[in-house]
Image 1 (cartoon, rainbow, N blue to C red):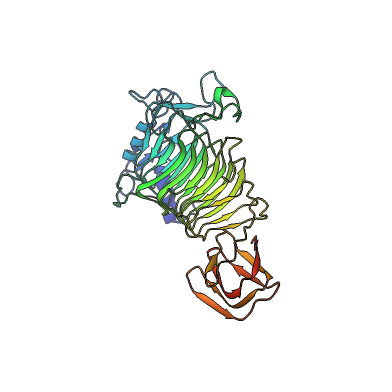
Image 2 (cartoon, rainbow, N blue to C red; image 1 turned 45 degrees about the vertical axis):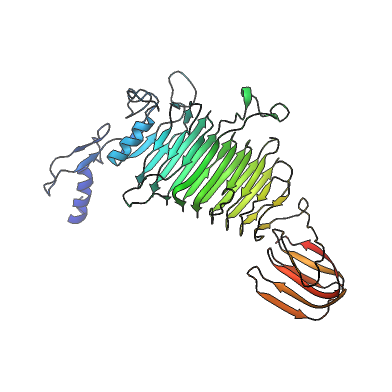
Length: 439
């Protein structure tokens, strides 16, 4: 270190004093000898500043585990509580680290695991299974979080509750009940719907009366908002509802490569409630043959979705419910059609074909009355017969009219975006044809 300047040498020496170069303790932190500044410096243990949950912890060296005295959550609840109290990160061991078995590590919950309010916290996990064995209630409930990162393996339940419920109920140091600026990764969320009864793959002929129950991922923003988070749920399976956004969920990014074997695979909002807004969702939805299965139900507004559908019920792939407006959905095809119940017809789809979503041409309304494009795509109006029209008016979504005086002519075209209207003033009605525009 002869050629290192004194300031740099002191900086490196501080790391040596902290134990970064060797002689680390097996866990926890202790105080070093006095530094040249005369203060003790905490030495980071071999596990870093994190706690460990292990398959036979604490007997196998982990800080917590199934052998934690009095635990009903395989040591997980105790580990999260300790991580919060000690301001440490947490690691849950996974892999096939079991004694004399080539099986995944399984941590059993006999009651709901409640993850407390955290800030600037990280939880990592190997590819383990968290199995909720209770017949009712949620498996995992995540309280308020800010600037945190969570990575889970598989979470499995047999109950009628949520596999994971995100619900910001507790006010943290900033006095907010909120889940924000955090990322969550779930390898799989397996619900109590019994995706494979008896160990066999789902068979629609044998399971038409099967009781599908529970929700895979429930973003429950009733106590406080859930906003600006990055959420990845690689697989969601075997639920009455796959993923459900409820109340003040805004500006979240959700990636769900496979939501399948559910009754309703994706739901944004609830009846009478359109506050779920400005979320970005990418998902593949496939019921794999469940009778009357629904792909996506949208009650919210101004959400951006990129979806792919497979094996849904008739006219149940994509449903725009009454409160919904301003949503944009991109999908290569809509094989099960689109059901449009929206009161404000401003939702929009972009697709490669309308083969399963025919454009309905409405009747020409009486003179002076408007026809509104209620399709979730733009339409081109073609005049088949001019009639005797002396004025027509195109009205924008916000009600601004554009008046044209004069006659129509055969073959004339006009374009209406979703929610726009057109009015003819005539002595003899024209005839028209509507054609949906893909882009």
